[in-house]
Structures are given as structure tokens and as C-alpha cells.
Image (tube, rainbow, N blue to C red; front, side, top):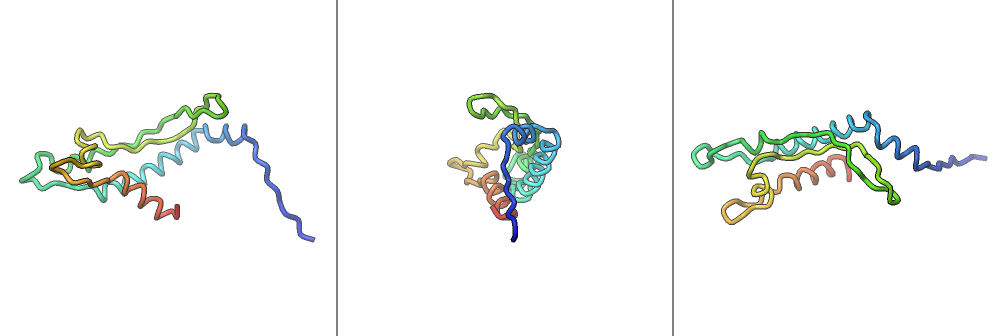
Length: 119
């Protein structure tokens, strides 16, 4: 007769794992992979029309952070990473305006990352 294994998780163990430095290193690696995707699909202006061609593409940064995520009303610090663009016109490139089309680089980066890792 075959026995079926049964897993019962403990919230305290899972919670302590989510706050470890080794997990933060993995989140930074994942953000760096997304950064490469974002840089590859970023628009680069032509030097004749754009005052700073390539500034948006060169302004992506990855920052390791500990984020406070409450669980059952108690504050819990969780390891994570943030990939963002620090260019002064980043929101215009992402959302567009009257003169600049909507490129949605960060949104498309998330979609490509999900597609590559099947959701």
C-alpha cells in the first residue's frame, strides 16, 4: 500500500524564511534579470530630436529592501528588491502624454518576465 506524504506548513517557519538575507539575494537576482529585460526594450531617442538619448535606458537601478508586510495585524519585515527607473522623465515614458507615446516599459517587463517563467 502506497502512503501519501502530507505537508503541514508552520507560519512561523515560513515567516522567518521570508526575512532571511539569502532570500533577499535571490530577489535581487530576479530584479536584475528584469532589469536586463527593461533595458533591452527601452526606447532610445535619436540625437537630433532628443536632448539626452539613452538616458532612460541607463537609469535603471536595483535596490535591495526590507519591506514591512503586516500579517495578522503584526508588522513583519520581508526581504525583497525593487527595480526602478530614476530618469526625471520616467513617468512620461511609462504613461505617455500629448507629445510622447505610451511605451509602458515596466509593465511590459513584468509581462515578459511572467511569460518566460510561465506565470
